[in-house]
Length: 602
Image (cartoon, rainbow, N blue to C red; front, side, top):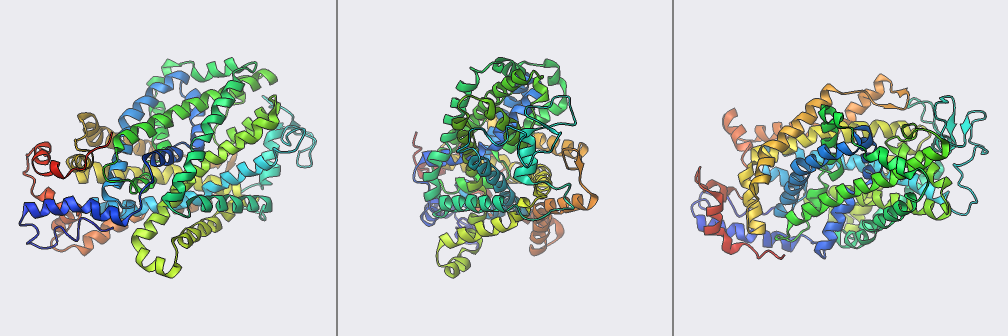
């Protein structure tokens, strides 16, 4: 696992011969590849990464952002951000993972020792994320079970024990603010049995507890054999949602009012293009959707063969992710247009974002559709597939870290790798239990706000600084040339050097300036809950300064010398040391390394 250090740069003798150094470099990937399992085929890696990138956010977040930020005009900043931020950063993470063949912790420790804490921070944020993300899957499973064997769906009528008397509308209440829709009351009073705030968590929702257990069992059975089992599962979980999305689209566009919903979704409002917030929303959507800075892409790429065409894969994943977001927008808003027609309400009285779109609005839509007995189960199975793919990747980050860091100690104790995966899944399940209490929705919203919004932006900034500026674009280009036989073009180099870091910095500054405390609907969190939220953020972020302090403290010499050593990568260090200050990297590679580059399979 620890290739690139043991054979290189340890003694003065090893630094004396450029030939010896190049020989060591050529042997590193072969040694590492012999020790690490790989995907059975290229398609498995593509499906796994597409499945991870395409998640619930594509269904509930993108359509709302699109219509709220200028409709069709939003596609201009969105696609621009995909080109200048999404594709280059995804390509960068694939490069780091595939070249080092290590998880994010060890990869960053070699690439930028000063910011080695970034790697551990990605593991921590992924671990925190997977403790509560499966709660959404338990909700989807609960809705799925309630979709079978009934003449009408339980969230359609107001004649149930959980409905509030005199406060329920069998459709959307529109401007009658004292009323709630039947689907909203099913979500609040039946699914969640929601309390009044985080101060009152109430007891466990035992039905959700059972659903959560079942979801974690499914996750475990899909990943317990590592990439060998995950690679097989993604053939279904990554592909099946597209069949459902296309089927729903074909069905929805034939419904009355669907055209109005689609027009509301795509009609450009050009004045929105002059608002900075719209561009920042586009950048944040691309960043979050592709999963940059979660460490998952690095982990999955580390199981690739050394000469896998990661540029092609980055383009496929990015295009598939954007296509799915736009497709989901048409599916959702054709249905919302239908509901506005049925209830004679404006579209903006129905459309919303977040979990409310797929657990309140769309269930109401399904209940009025012809053949709802078919569409409702299929829709919630689709949600399960979308969520499970993302969950596979985040759990794999933690498992990869433990194997890389503690494998020699842990695996002999647990005897089998399957028991390690079982232990990780059980710990995540246990930490997710507070989210399925009767006040669990408030815990969920708090965790999601401070993990997926606050922590991620800080973490992403330091990741980009570590790789693009400290490690440097020339070194990234050298790694790519060793794997693919050619250097990245000027487009990627400019994005890495200038556009990506500045864009992430703008998002970070904007998020600080525009910070708003978390809330759930009209509920405002108490001050102590906000402090808990900041504590959740610090659980991941704090490793970055801790790692930098430890690295500087352990180095020798003056403070300046220690800092310089901390900013010097330990991977491929000898080859870099022999580079003349202004020598062209392409010439060096073509003369000394090209013969050792494995052929690139088209």
